[in-house]
Length: 339
Image 1 (cartoon, one colour):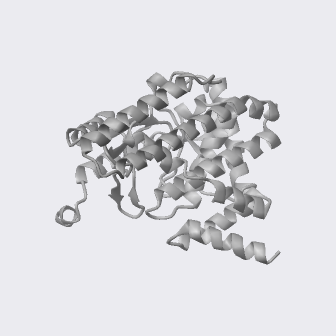
Image 2 (tube, rainbow, N blue to C red; image 1 turned 90 degrees about the vertical axis):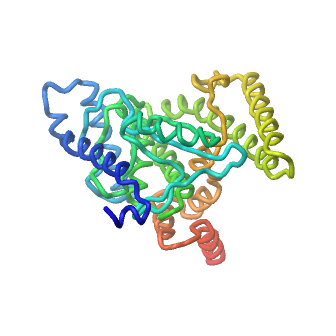
Image 3 (tube, helix red, strand yellow; image 1 turned 60 degrees about the vertical axis):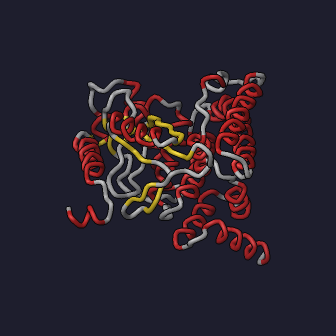
């Protein structure tokens, strides 16, 4: 305990994580057992069968690690499994980072109990930070524990379930300590590409599912362009040699301008069509950048290898690198010159 205090470790926080994780472990049931149970809801049985197939595809076809992840099911109701807090200064797009044993730093903090997250949020808001607390339906313990399929995940469409599972399995296969931006952007890329390939190969009406998802993809791209543009403009604002008050006023103007532009767009899917409800502040913009770093380099590796499995094998080489993107650039140069 004394050593933990000297190291600045929040014992109460980690005890709460331990209790939350223990509950998930204790309440897990093998997926095969749930599927075979006559009392299981048919919709849940169908989704679990899909999850089994997706997991097998991720391991056998994509080459992700064959751990025990997603071989069990945990009933938690419709609530989020974890609440995730993101924080950034009100006048800078630099996310606050928390330090963790083993995994290094990360620009977010998870809570099994919402009130704990809200209490932490209040502390930062009182100090003038931008904050955002969101519920999530899945997360990865990056191989430390057996991650289960959770009830909210079964509400997803098949292709979205594939995206989430492959995303989280990628984390358990490839994790670079202290580089959350690279980890999350890579998992986002592999999850999306893997889900597309799984749907076309195995999902009945897979091409139709991809076509239906295309509207969502178009909205995501347009939304991403808006946020990337806003973030770039705010970077310029925050670099100006003016007072903090002037920076905050310019920030408010830029955010309002983005909402007005968004309101004039013909959005194709729900959620994007109500920009007045979007939470836009430095915390959400910094979080967006974490998960949506430019994926051009990942796409170029995929193009160079020709297959997602081979691309993932290249991405795995990054684990020993301090600068993974620089390593990928060198790999691309070497392989281009060898052809």
